[in-house]
Length: 367
Image (tube, rainbow, N blue to C red; front, side, top):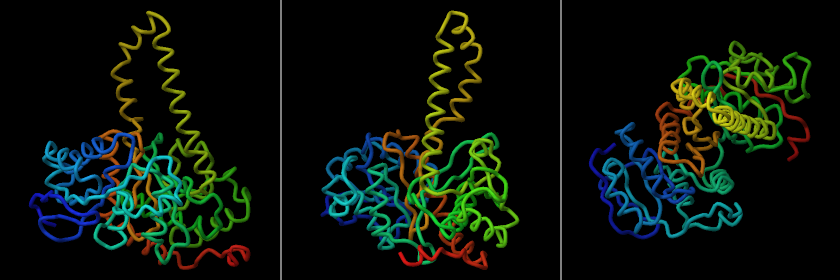
């Protein structure tokens, strides 16, 4: 990739102005999110330092971005600017977002679909991003449905969980494909060589769960993934770190995600109440502060910012809308890891290793 600074100058909507031609590592929706575009550019300032060879296609309001980039030298060097006259609001319905071809999110996604960028990062409207990604970028030919994946903390290190809401209903084939994609994600982003996989169920016994879960488990046991497949896991195994990859349907995964977020908030609130309840408690807080600071850093949600819609013809990362520069930089880190470590190629390799595809119910075949 070119190392020369990008030339930022006025242009039409959809017109790129890099100094030298070539593919971009990532397209970035500069206008999506609660604190855009300042938090986005601050995040890119951090990301450009971490990934000095990366090139970013920054999409948004040229008049605002040009001046802001001038005060962020590392981001300015790594970015080329493309104007987008429209912004998808946080409450806009996905169907309406699909019609806004001049939005910053749409133009950034178009760059991925056209092969100009390897991936896209946006802190904008989640429903709109998922809809646009599925329709514009499209699903890999080998994958039936894309899934939403994210990284979370556990007692033994970070874990990958999917699906987190993209598919409320799944069959056995979908769960098997999620396992393959989760394996590729753990290898690419967490750097694991042999990630272990578990299917989330109501119990760990082989006879537990419905037919689709048991069918998916049988397929995984009989495949090349069998050596790393640990069978069924339960809800407490998520935070225990029993396995590296938790596989489930989108309904269950989303409930588990929101429950975990609520539990973390409750823990923070209770700690605050305990340490402010009396003078001795405040003194105890001062003594425990170094350990609490380490805990706060470990549990910082910004470390886990960046949910990924996987199974598409490109990398699509959704940053939390309310994140700051540090959180957005982490989302860029996730996207860059996926691009650098051949994420989609790993998925294809994993599907080839399955040897046998999970059978699909007759009803699903008719859809």
